[in-house]
Picture 1 (cartoon, rainbow, N blue to C red):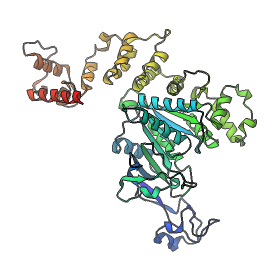
Picture 2 (tube, rainbow, N blue to C red):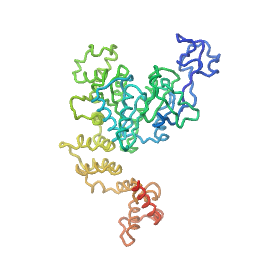
Picture 3 (cartoon, helix red, strand yellow):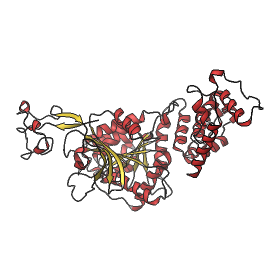
Picture 4 (cartoon, helix red, strand yellow):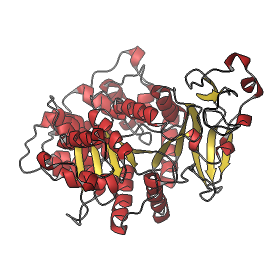
Length: 509
């Protein structure tokens, strides 16, 4: 990981106050060798030329009010998305998400009506908690990011125990973070004690104390917002290209953009997301741009004209973007809270992606969508979207979903699939399928030992037969032909005792 560092040019101020560099930092912020570097004297300041990368000095754990602990790292704006994803999954040990929810909108504080706020909080947490999603925001304690943090906070307070941690990742600009000096230590901080000081932050911003992880993007500038936007977009794109659940089913991690409030900058974010085929869910009633889009989405395109409703979209470029967004209805979902009192945001988010992927004309698309519902563990979505009175499934088309439900220990999905066409005889007629199921046994089962002891990475039904005889006695007939001597497993009574002990420990916990 790297961050950027400014070389100060004392003779080039260009309308800045005396003692300040063009990067926005005070003169005394820079080392002596940068201030007195004669080779740069008199040059016009250029960020691309006068900034260099050095090893990061801000990383580790972050503590808010000595209670909540998160992870953070300061990275260069030129860091590759691949490196960041590797950091999160391998070093921070985050499980790859089954869904990425990118929340964007108003960066300044705004109020939402109580009913809409409650719907947003409950819906966002429910979709993250049930599907194993990552939530991606700007990470500061302002605007839409603060609302996301409040949703996480409410969930923690209302839950006696959490089934899983809510992963809320803040991608913020390092140069606008108030009290960022508390995060700096050349050997890392474990933890850094961060003080959330809204009163003293001025035009800077504090980190939100309810996010779990922070990527702090540094381009060497101080007080300049928006540095993180490009890298965040690259990270979202990279995640959308990763296989769902690390399986080779062809299903990729879905990404959905959720929009509250917002201005012209948010419009540009929505436009770029939709041009990358990312579906967007806009919350009607959350204010400004979100309300504009909600209004025009219900109109014929010919009636979408410039009027006082769009007074802050005074540039034709913004208005053209708005029209282009309306021309992509398969990627746009408006959540109208007043139309259906029983409407849920979590359902709207999941259906938005299914609606977008349904428009793609590809072989097996319906099966891939069902795979998503299984990965999200949302039986309700599967019932309403795929198992209606009009749907007719062949058993073989449900086999991949059945396999995923079995190895994922999703009993409700197994029941649903059996009720809607899966024939077990057909599903289990292939030895390869049976062997794969044995390979994915949970650790608490005795035969999990078999998968660990089988030669190489493969397990055969002959291995299963040997272990069944080991358990029931040699008087039983082999179910399958015996393996060759070199491939036989030897499981002793100690293995049995060890496994039973593990199960007892698991049950006691």
